[in-house]
Image (cartoon, rainbow, N blue to C red; front, side, top):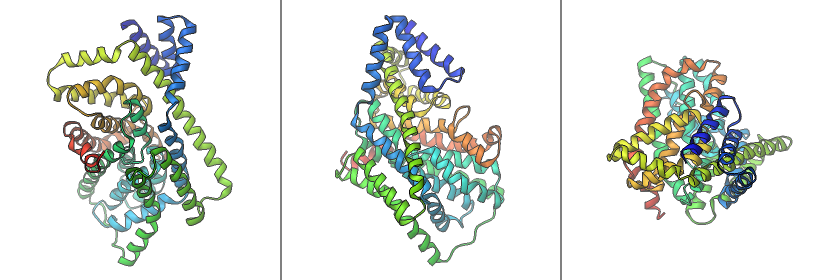
Length: 431
């Protein structure tokens, strides 16, 4: 067991260092580790079976639908209307543009289900506006990178669907409800940091808009925001499943972007469909490869061994959960969210449950934890996109990111040690 585990981990990190794509690294490392323990033919057959079995889930059908609806929304003028709505409501507060940035990223991230999409769509508009108003470029980029991750918690969220599969069947609807309070808490924590920073720097206040303009901007954004109500309301009300909700989201996004806002032309739809297919293929390959690796880890009893090792280090639940969080933060800085959830859920979930944490609470904890990794160097995807939009360097935005990291970490600790934040809403709705 020890030799297989060492070969698996060693090969995986070696392939990553050689810049092999992460899905290929996971698959090859799993294959090499299995070949070293059994014959080549049984190893390849087993991996193929496990990869196919990992994708044989009705719940995974929701992912391509939500990916496609997010891409359509991204092209359909949704971001612009959400930004204008947020600007009308809170733009005149101290640090107004930074606050608008956070709120817009939260809303667009929730609608699109993608941190990368939120970074690109909101950052492309907000970063030039913040620079024009006198905000520090590096601070603006840091805010965008941190705020774009809130969409991973606020449903509909693809990564929560992935966790539902990895955990062995936690209700997707319950996970969606559980993500609301922590996701909003992260957004509020980031807004507090932005407010304090703006007061310290003395950034100018935007002019208050007349009430009729505010109403106009809010009404213009309501059709976009209704997507969340439609999808989540239908799931919570038992009208349709998460997968069916994804299909409904695609239809609604098409109607809104093509016929209502008229910002998506028929000619660009094939490109959108192709991009959605590419993104879905990447995600599904990651899921398939990670499922095979997770099976090998389980077959070699590695999760059970690590669980026992962690529980023998200390009998203090607070300390053990802190260690798990710190390990996941390091993992999140190097590994994409999807494989991280699929690989580490079977390892750490049994430990968390042994300490009295429910699978629901652990799911929100691990997603929030890995969301911090999305905006952490050296691999954080949203960092590089933000730096490209802001025309700055990665090392320049680390310092303004630190207080934002601290705010996110405080929320992470609250979610970790107090079940209420994750479980209150699902319990109130009967999940």
